[in-house]
Length: 436
Ligand SMILES: [Zn+2]
Ligand SMILES: [Zn+2]
Image (cartoon, rainbow, N blue to C red; front, side):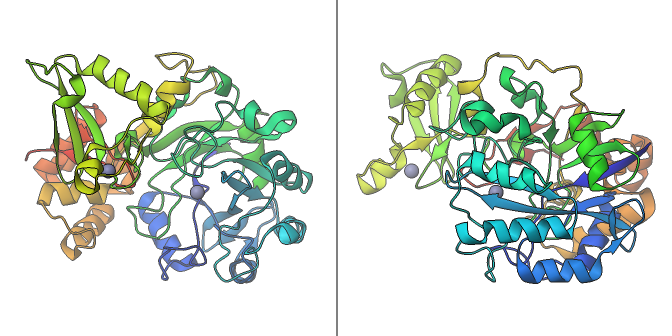
C-alpha cells in the first residue's frame, strides 16, 4: 500500500473564468511543487478536452492513467435541474463516452466549446442513476456553499432529502473551501460518507491547484483503488484531508446578496436599546456592536434563515431591500445536529493550511497576487526545502528559520492554530491577520 496526494476536482479552459494556460504540462509543474501525485482531469465530458486527454494520457498496466509521472482520474463537474453541482469520476474513456451520449439529449451545452461544466435537465436521483449505471462515481460538490450546492439555504438538509432512493449510490461529499471536517461532522446524517477536500481549481497557479487535497492509502493510483478507498474496503482509505482554513474560503461568513458585504458582530460595553441600531459600514463589512455579540448574532441569524434580514448598507445607498444570505458556517450551524463535531472512527484528520504563496505575500507585505518577487521566493523555497506541503506541515521550524525568520514564525503559528483570520464571504476570500 502507498500514499498518494490527490486533488480530484479541477477545471479546464472550457469552463468560464479558467486560465488559458492551464494544460497538462503546467499542471504537472504545479503538482511537483505542491507534492501532488494524482489529479482530476477536469471537464472530461467536453469534446475537445476529452480528445486532448485521450491523446496524451497513457494507460498503465494497473489501469491508471499517467502523464510524465503524474497520475490522472477522468473527472468532471455537472450541474443538475436543482442547480446542484456534482463531482463525477469515470473508470475509463469508454464510460466517459457512454455517459456523454446518455446526457446529450438532456443538456444544451455539454458538447459546446464552453460546456466544461455541463448543465443537465435531470433531477439529482436521475443523474446519479445514469452515472452509476455506467460505472462512474458521483457526489455533491462544495456541499455547503450558498450557491449551486445541495445544502445551501432553503434547499436540502440531508443527503436523503435530495437523493431519496439512490442515496446509497452517493460515493462521497466534497467539503468545499469554506468547510472542513469539524464543521461537516456536526451533521449526524453524514457520518457514514467519506469526505473529499478538492481545490476546484480554475488555474495551474499554486495558490489554486492543490490548495485542497486528499491523501489516499491505496495500492496503485487507479480509479478502482480510489473507489475502494471511498468505500473504505480491503484496507484502502483516505488517511488525511488537507485544505484551506474554512475562514479563508469565499463563502464562510454571511453576506448581503447584492453588495456582498460580510456581516460581523463585535463586543462593546454599552449597548443601544435595539441591538441592530448600533453598527458601522465599511467597504467590505457591516459590523454590529452589542454587549452580548453571541446572542445578538443568533437573533440575527434567525431572521436571515427566514429570509427576512435586509442589508443596511444597500438600504442606505439605494433605499431598497436586499437580503442577507447565510454563509457556509451559519448554514451548517442551522442544519447541524450537534454543536461540537462528532467524528466517526473512520474519519481521517483534517489539516487546515494557508497557501505558501499567501504566507510569503503577507511576510513581505506585497498585495499583488502575481508578484514576481513572491513567486521567485516560492520557487527558491521549494528547490531548497522540498514540496509546499512538506514546508507547511513537516519541515522543522529551525530549518525554516534559516530561510526566513518571520516566515518560520508564521508557519509555526499556523501549525499551532494561533493565527487570526478575517473570514471570507460573499465571494471574497478570507485573510490571515499578522503583524511582522
Ligand atoms: Zn461547482
Ligand atoms: Zn448590501
